[in-house]
Length: 339
Image 1 (cartoon, rainbow, N blue to C red):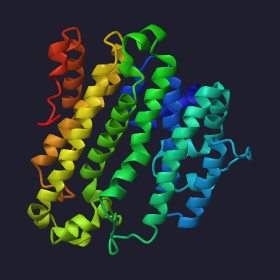
Image 2 (tube, helix red, strand yellow):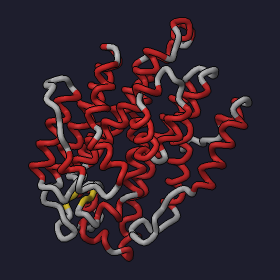
Image 3 (cartoon, helix red, strand yellow):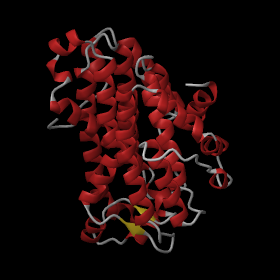
Image 4 (cartoon, rainbow, N blue to C red):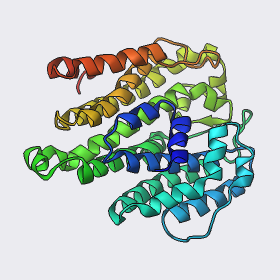
């Protein structure tokens, strides 16, 4: 990957960059490029100042290039002008370089990247259509829990599948696979899917106030109605106690998914410290975020809930220091009851 794309990874991936940096060189290029391409498609989808159909057309064109359906050069210069983030502007302007890197991968890796981007972009296209008429005065909510689960799979659960397949292809040796049959068992990939869903669900629950203010509500309408709430009611922090039981149920689901992710992490053979740490860090940050969400007014837009940099550094330090003593390391995450 060239220096420009490497810098874009640093500038656009924020907290995920620490995960990318620790990954072994055998799998970092594939995961890094998949992230960059997904970030480019997500940037297009989220450029709400641009009309809905224009965004859908741009997404369709980029998706087609990624999947190899056409090879027409793409120019997203006009979309790039609307980006507030310099990194995202450059990402759209330099998209041809990322696509060229994709073409240089072998057929197996290219197919894996194409498969995960096919699913991710389907979720992004669905989001653009679903929230096309959304605004602060017209909050659009997902219909039910099935729609929420489907969305978390499309934009993150599928990444767990991709991560697993890339590791199976490049990181785990044939002898390890023979010795650790869990590495290729169907449930290992299923745990990876839940891992991704859990991280995305934490993001959704944390970002609820911000999403509401652009007209998006990922909490299902059916559940809100049963709780005596409408999406617009969530704009008022005073309604948080009424929302809390419903909200806590979703926190429980997120925590359960992260417990599956922790199980996934500990199935990976011990010598693969880089892969295990790359899995552990977002899980530990995720459970730290959940703890803060349980103790805060989650409808208060003025209170941005997040794990601080100092807390992240402490989590990372503990995971590295305790790694040689696996019983202690495994207790860094305490699974919820029943998991």
